[in-house]
Image (tube, rainbow, N blue to C red; front, side):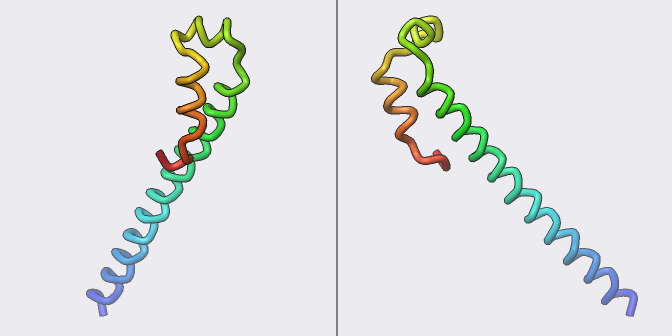
Length: 67
């Protein structure tokens, strides 16, 4: 019986680790989307301050959220 209980706890812990990993991926994807949206709203002077040009911004903002 003790083995079964320990196995159940290990299964729950494994499930929580997977859920945490998925949550982390989703947070990264949301942050990428947010940053790219902000980047697309910058004017040419602001882009120059960052050392970027419009073509670089276009390439970055067209990437899918998972990349």
